Length: 523
Image 1: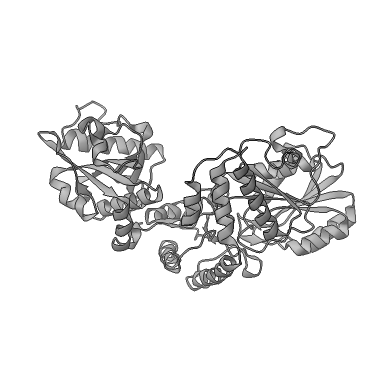
Image 2: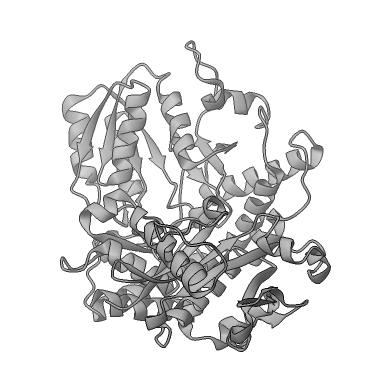
């Protein structure tokens, strides 16, 4: 397998980092005293983010990033801020090291490319490094420029160097493609510039008139998008939104039927169990769409079901369940339909007219930042006889104008900007077109996709890796090349699956590049 660069997250990797640190900064460069363990733990170890270059399981190179002041360079240059742009968000790049026997190979270049991509992804304004004096020309090739006097002592002289955001952006165009980062995750998604700008705006009190007016606009856009009668916007994740739905269902006297054909259907079962809901479960094999005929048969044969709860887009498999047919089956069986729309909102047309309760989130297909949830409801949310946990009581939001508790004006502004970008249907048309091209390319490369085209979400492709290629290894290898796929979730790793998610507006060139690398790793 080729060299890969990843974020260090395993005990064995951290042990090798200590050994490489010792070999470089004790034995080769006399900065620290020898010790019997031949292991050097950096004084900022707990605050460092380490990128490691791996050959199989062996660390052949490393670099650390740390964005907390004071930097180590602060001790060497007391007037460091004089060399930085005012208010700049800076990161210090440290402990760049490659095994001597691997320095003529690709390890250093791979580390540097991954490093630059990470700095861009984290939105730093400037990156700082103390480059060994004899290596300053090498760093310059990657965009670093010297500033200030040299620092250090005999045997270990360094030149402070910096790289700015503008240079980083420029380098993405001239460095090899591996320096690019293509975010094909279900979340966090790649955000549009307008959404990032909205998040960075001024902070407003959630009790202010401006916040209330923005909330009203956001709710209006959500209702227009879905045809729902009511919606409440809450601080939290999709998990919390589904807990709110479960809390609301706990007020109903009858029993329910939960439909499951994947991981997130099973999570609905756990939500129901958490509220001790009276329920039964109707399961379909993972990768198959829910069968409305089976649902109708179950409802009519046994009767007495008050509600049905299902996932619209089953994110674990990429299956898009047939909501309209399920709605008809529930109507015929006298049960109200409730939906988890967390991965369908923003990626397909969603019609919530006649749906009792539905959950959504600000991230994923809507393109906002994670942190805001929403619950759509057909009927007015009134308080039940049994008290509910205050934060999970939908009636508390409905009765207080949607503002019973603290809210984030920045997250709400970002959500509003994202919804404006999603209006008009252009994004959905673009996604449908792009999705068709992705499926066609995967078929050409003979990479199997779990969900059949007829029942698939355009935004989620669950790939079945060959049995001889562990999906975790494939995901890490792609990550080292700047391709971010969903592969670390336990339910994916257990089945040797990984996922391409098209939740954002991706340029064709980025998707083509990602598919090329995916094919190379999975073939």
